Image (cartoon, rainbow, N blue to C red):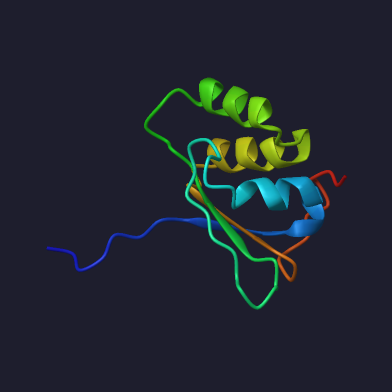
Length: 101
């Protein structure tokens, strides 16, 4: 038996999401995600995508909760690429093909 299961994670700069998104990610009532922030104020967040359910409902729940098109766009892109986890980091990678607020 394998000791650990491995999952892919995207490393994305917080420049690709809004400040409001950063606050909403760590809100305890945020829809369909598990998140944390680095207490040293490095703006590090990890988002877990629920890949077992209908994603259209997940995206709508994110919009309804107040997440921006920028945030949901990153989540959509990761889901399309089969990536379940996203780390939004102030020192994360910047991508030319991802829009910025």
